[in-house]
Amino acid sequence: MYRDRDFDLERELPAHAADLRQDLELQTLLDAMAAGDRFLLQAANAAVLASLDDPEAILYRQDILADCLAQPGVAREIYALACEAMEREKRVYGGFYSVLPDGLLSRSVEVLQMFVGILKRLRQFAEDHRASFRSEGFTTLFEMLITELDDEYFASIEEHLRRLKLKDGILMSADLGTGNHGGNYVLRRRVSKQSWKERIGLPDRPGYVYQIADRDESGMQALAELRGRGTSLVASAVGRSTDHILSFFRMLRAELAFYVGCLNLRERLAEIGEPTCMPEPMGVGTAGLSGRGLVDVSLSLTLGERVVGNDLDADRRHLVMVTGANRGGKSTFLRSVGVAHLMMQCGMFVAADSFRASVCRGVFTHFKREEDATMQSGKLDEELGRMSAIVDELSSQSLVLLNESFASTNEREGSEIARQIVRALLAAGIKVIYVTHLFELAQSLHVEQLPDALFLRAERLADGRRTFRVVEGQPLPTSHGGDLYRRVFGAVLDATPAAADAGLA
Image (cartoon, rainbow, N blue to C red; front, side):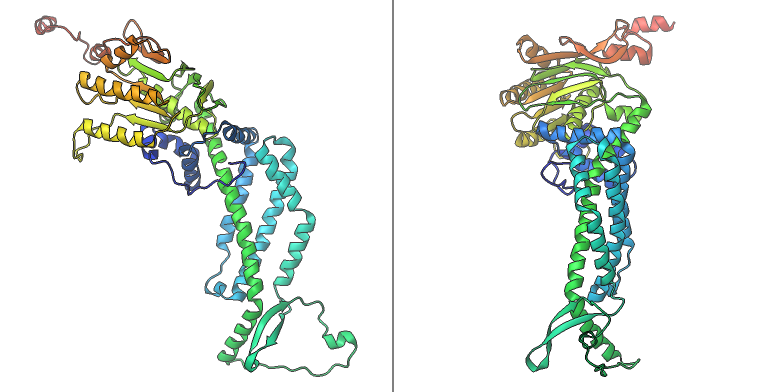
């Protein structure tokens, strides 16, 4: 996930993460990535909502993802090996006995023996597939596995594990301290089953043997404590080795989870028929934003079918105002741009034929909320409070998406509030995309002829039909609500009561 550090699943998410999830309907996207797996959901949540702001870091992930898309079966199998290692480690029973040195040693040896088998399979994967992977991330991983997990390493670790099973008992040394109390217990490697006297040719003599009676529980306990003193250091060392390899599998699973989630999402979109592309991340401050066939992923996933895509040419534009017909696809367009930014900035593909954009230092949303009966103040007060919280987090080169913001008051007041906020954001070097029905707001900004502003309008055909496309066009003083009225009631909106009565007659 990173060239120089680990992927932290527990990293604190931005304070506005909940707003992003709600306003951009990200939960649908995240669920598609998870495909019912809670761990994949956690990884997708951490990656998508904690955006990168370095184009090089984004391209690094894109290269890895490209390898995964080209070899999805291999990527899934490596992830499955990491999951298998963690699941099998949990099933190795330890119980109360594992807190004692002998128990800890026994369990650690069993777990390590299991890990060795999975590491061998992992190395075999690296040897079989390294030639077909091109990304820096996979190349580094495969080279590490092949170099460090060679035959000599496995032979050495298997020999150590064989000895650590202590099938022939234990041999240990100790020092006599004050009052002849034992100390400095050290487990020794048994070189030969012969006694040292036999090895130097001295005659065999009876040794000193102490045999504990079958029912001597105190004696058994004392012997166990004595044995534990000898195996304590070794058990601790082997336990640390087990934890080290387990942490490797845990991190491998976390690093690959994001890419497996991307594979899940790509498969879902392919089933629907939606296009995907690798976006082009541009440097911070380059004011780039353009795309072809850009779609709202969450809407497509919810409907289970292709949706209308939009083209966007907003390079060198810091303000994009979107107006036009009711139910014409304006909010859907806004979500598609926001989600595309988040997907690009976490190293994913984007649901579009093509997409490129400047990397921004945070995507923020301010969408109209439904009425909340529990609110302690008015709707406008609530909107201003959320805007104030956003401003506290903003920095230069951020992106703010506003959807019907400040429409809870009358048009004159709402337009004036919005106009001042938009001007302040632009002055601070923040890009703004604003969907609004406030004609006075949109028209006043259009009249100013700002060189870095783009005005879009939801397309409406002559017969009133919506194409759900957003095209370039100046604001109009109507949202064509009459079209909806005629479609629902089959009558002309401005018909007089008398005319309506005559028609009924």
